[in-house]
Length: 417
Image (cartoon, rainbow, N blue to C red; front, side, top):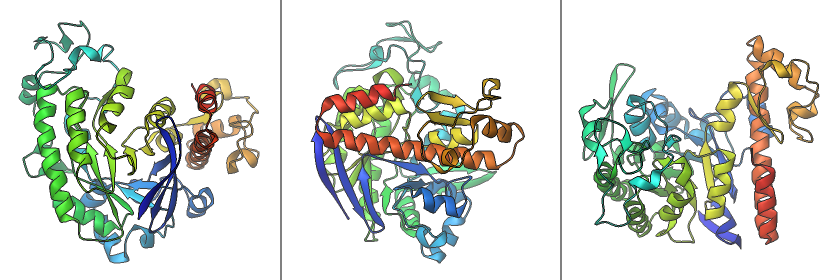
């Protein structure tokens, strides 16, 4: 279990994460396999596509009881069976997604905060500007910013977050996760890379909420290190701190000083400030260990992360969007169900080389399958999007290894849509 940096281009780098189930060339992408297997694919698709890395969901495998079956089978690799390296998240994202995220109908990236700088304190002694607590506006900037802590706490969070545990209500039942329990489940799942349990805060949480939350995340990180018993797994700590510079830097220094095998960058972002936040989050981390950007996978954000030194990413974008009829091509993201593709005889993407494109399936053909609600449509779109993302990351690695900044910039411009 190790990480080797091969080449650098500014802050961007290529490398190899060596795991018990094979090597992962970086930068790379972990395709989401929530329950252990990528949705919509057949077993033969999985092995022909050969994803270098997948990530499964500890929370969902826990609440469905599948983690017990997987443990009995000898882990995720033997249950399915799989050959690629696997990550499992800790359940920390569900603290947000089933809690404040669900309550306030927001994802981890807030696309409405057009002037997030107005809510960023620059050091520990400063605080966000005064707010009109009756509205989601920052008085100083006149645009949407963080909801004040007081307002959030008046709302009822569907997830109960305590100092030492989190209690979820899911399908009418109560489930409890602690740092130790999260690690134990992930050890039973047998993933190659596991994550510390943390609280993923909302983009609408203000400075005081993030500061309070950060204390829990840091305490839980130490508990996770103590709880880890199994060899052959890499344990990543997670940097939090929301959109606040000093909290991100504080968390980076604290987590970076602990004996983790790698690090995840978690929590929420403002869309306009992602590059800054990633930079703050990486500032205190040792350079010789891998960095993973949790839950981020839009192509423009991938280039931002790579440029700052991120090694791996995960996101539902390529597979979830495929199941809803969105396919990726060098012409852009195509909503294949639209009428404009009714007579389109082009391949999904010229020169793609995936099974779907090379077998002669045209855009109009895939559109018919989606319009008639034939499950094969989801399978074919998923195969194509996975191939597209794999090809993208291969080109990114080539550009970095070339040692020429112009090659990476040219590639980024080519994929900017």
